Length: 302
Image (cartoon, rainbow, N blue to C red):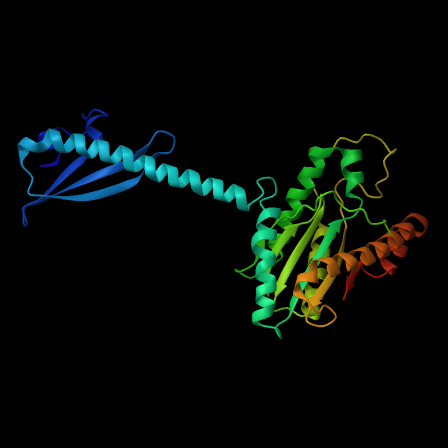
């Protein structure tokens, strides 16, 4: 009874909008109907039990199925569009990391609530940035800087191993004004700053994660395809394929009494780490690579 004797292979597009399937044993009839959307195409199918089906009703059933399929497709399409908007609201399309709004509205309250519910369970927060990143943008161009950020996001995602690890982006309003000197959520903090929240991880465990991320960024060869050298007027001590990071760590409980202050305390330790990095850069300039590597890693913890 499929297509009432029409020859397969000679069906017009109009005929393919629906299919009626009869069951000889039960005398029941079902309709298999694509869910159609003008932008997304066929989104799937719905099977309807039509009960006792009379041949004379075929035209009416076809119209009903076509109407229902198209409108159901619109609803599914609207749902897909809503999902895309929700993804945009939650994720930064540039880096693929979770964005500032989601971090502030969802992640930070989770951190505080988790600390209240489990006051003895440690939470560590890593804050790190890319050293001299303004020099990257000014000397080699913002397209190269954007490429570096995308690669850093991928590097960090590759180095947080648990399935519950989440990557996010946080951009601090106005940027940094300070003087130069394990469930996880990763956030970009400022133009080149990131945050990693480690639930159930003490300071020693956070140190391990920090060193792993530091080494991965240090050893990575960044793409220079979009780099355009604008000259040496802008100081950047490395070549465009090389980027370094400084990392600050804060852990609750301990010296951090309130989980809500983890962000600020990690920010403080980050600037201590950046002071170490400045000394390393001076050593690199004056004593070469050996002098640079002789100084400790720019990772500080509280």
